[in-house]
Length: 575
Image (cartoon, rainbow, N blue to C red):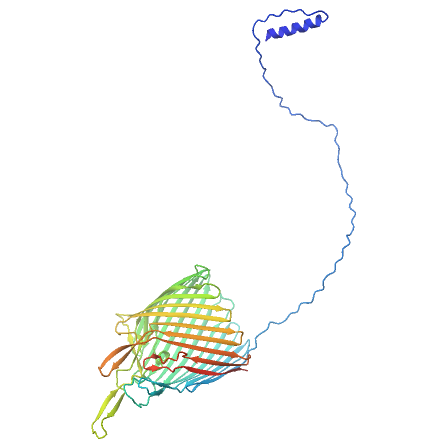
């Protein structure tokens, strides 16, 4: 490298000194040329332009306001009209009159006060009777006359935080014991039963708008019953309850005293059931839980029995009112008197002694909910244990008539025949303390409702009994199905259809020839009814009713066939 530099300087000097002379140089190459690149050094300083002059830029805007020519023509508005809400006209009086075949008479009158902020009162009267005859097994027609008369009046007084109410009633029922077991032609004159029942009730209940207040109510009721055979019952029934909300719980208690004074041909006694039931209710947005413990006293003139019943029930809304499972258990004492049992069978033998029923345990569970806003359903299973559960059988124990059957006209010997018509029912019981009567019951129901135009309800029950001392569950249906529908056609016609199917039942009878008791199975039957109501206006209408359209001479109670096709028509008026 040094040699190259020296050569370069020499050439430069010589070129400068002898630029006017010819160049004659001799170069000696010692070694081959080896080119080498020097290291590069970067300049880290960025270039910058330094402007020595600073120019200020300023703008000035001048706006000259000028209205754009437009035309606006407002549309005139009509003043709003405020009209009062239409309130349906209420009529104080309603009258229904009608009649039909079998000399049937129907009459109903109802009176009620119209809207009033201070008080309300009403009166109701009803008559329903028939004088038709029914053909029995011997082809002889017997008078199946019955009559039902009902009178009731009520009154209510409204105060700021409570309501006082009272009502009085009188009922009179007349029935013929026409259900004779006939083995031969007889002109036996049947007996008639007349029940007269009167009662009065008074009480109050709170009506606080503030639900945090203590809520309470009480009622006192007095009833009296007597029949054609001088049997009577006096009843005093007192009830009361109180409840209070604390946070998300409701605490409360119920108390009742149900006392009967009984005087019949076979029973003169006082008996009462006293019940004390404290309870608590828990609830949330989707669930409810009720629980409590009841003490019930079964008291008689000469003895007293104490019973304890834990009670609880729960339900949970699993799927927004679509699926709501529920379950619970309870128990109670059930008082049995003539007043309560004639509601089941009006053909009870006069003057019987009745035992109270102890429902030791009742367990139930099921599902309920809505398939849609129009369709709802219920499925429930029940299991119960009873002491002294009542059943009904025909009275075959004591002969009620001795009829003389003569032989030849000239015979001097008259052969008496013991004849029991079996037209009364007596009460028998199943279940003891050591071996209870068991009842299993399944219930199902589905309902459809479309506004106020169409309503349909289909329900059914299936029952099974495990008995301790009876052979059969006498006169208890083992299953039943009910269909009820109501169709409103333009507020002019209302069509009502009711279908009732009663399943197998058992009865007990006495075979005179074999001199033994026999169990007979009563066949299922179907009862179809149709009613058409026509409203010409709100003040006047008419109705036509068809009962037992299938024209079947079925028997719900053994030996008591019903009337066949019944047609009843009449008018209705409001004023």
